[in-house]
Image: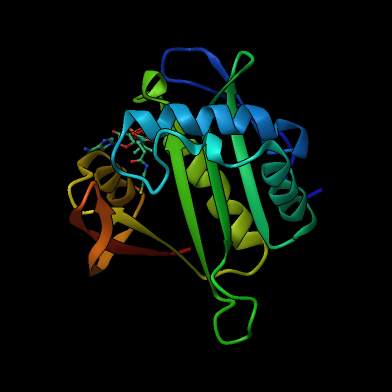
Length: 181
Ligand SMILES: CC(C)(COP(=O)(O)OP(=O)(O)OC[C@H]1O[C@@H](n2cnc3c(N)ncnc32)[C@H](O)[C@@H]1OP(=O)(O)O)[C@@H](O)C(=O)NCCC(=O)NCCS
């Protein structure tokens, strides 16, 4: 098993269970992505991700489950997914295996409870166990909340990727951030 379930206490005292995403979570994950896509402009995901089929998502999760060097985590508050995070090697080739990139979302109603931080620490712990040395991400340059969280966790801005996003016809830059783990 790549990841053993973990229970954490949210800042408001509620219990959050973090576990590896399973192929059977496919439909719920698509519903979740639709919610977070509508809540923020900070992601590639946008409202209407229902264009991904449940079968396609299930296949993606199956591949992920079978890949020992990639991890997708869900955090649940009660029965509901409130956060999704994933990490995988940038490449499996020897010259890039020391780097992994990750992505994280938390549903707006669960922001500020420490879930984002907990998910990043879990993803980073997994990466370290498989021998990764650097974890990295791209974040929209005006996403102050996420940048604040990443800096708080020891990530540094390495570069600006110009015109990384094109959102409703408007370009937006992203920072490339890295942390040595
Ligand atoms: C960014 C996001 C993941 C943060 O998740 P979250 O669960 O609300 O964050 P947390 O509650 O775990 O905050 C964690 C820590 O960051 C700190 N933090 C939060 N905002 C901060 C800011 N603006 N500046 C400095 N520190 C900040 C908090 O103080 C907290 O630290 P502490 O627990 O040691 O006090 C969440 O807002 C989100 O999903 N946003 C939409 C999607 C998105 O932007 N994803 C990132 C794309 S790159």
